[in-house]
Length: 67
Image (cartoon, rainbow, N blue to C red; front, side, top):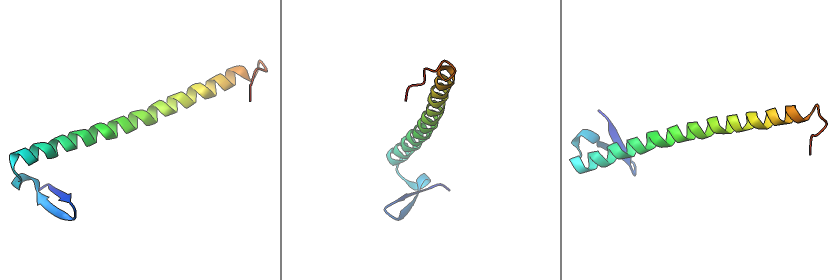
C-alpha cells in the first residue's frame, strides 16, 4: 500500500478521507510536473549552450571572436 509521510508520521493513503486523498493525488501530479519542467529546463540549457558553442565556432575563423 502507498503511504504518505508527514512530520515523521506515516499514513496509509487508502485509509485517508477522500478529500485528503484528492489533495495527495494533486500533490503527486504537481510533483510530476515539477520533474518534467526540471528536465525541460536542463534540455533547454543544453540546447542554449549548443547555440553558444556554434556561434563561437562560426566567429572564430573570421577573426571576429569577442572576449
